[in-house]
Image 1 (cartoon, rainbow, N blue to C red):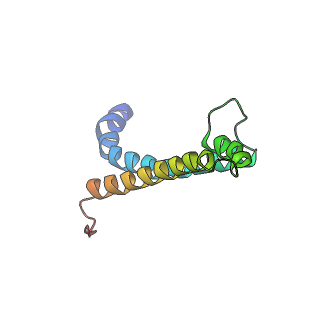
Image 2: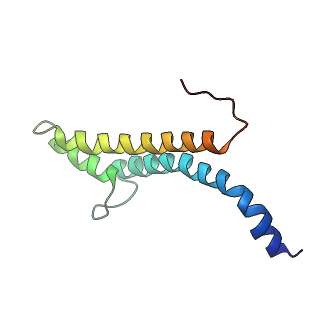
Length: 103
């Protein structure tokens, strides 16, 4: 069998579940790091859309209207939690040997 056959017919079908779980569990970290770096001024610059830029800009207006800080912060938190929960659920669904039980 050729190398291409082994990769596409043997390895990839068996690795898809691990790749999907890895991506869904890694994505929240990437989002949080990007937002943190943008908030600190090291990441993306102002015209680019970023949760960190929105949070950094809203700090100036916190005393006048806390909603400017609350909405991007809450949305970022919900996004990170959603990807974490989705990754945990996919890991539990794809791993039949796992002895984790739902509460």
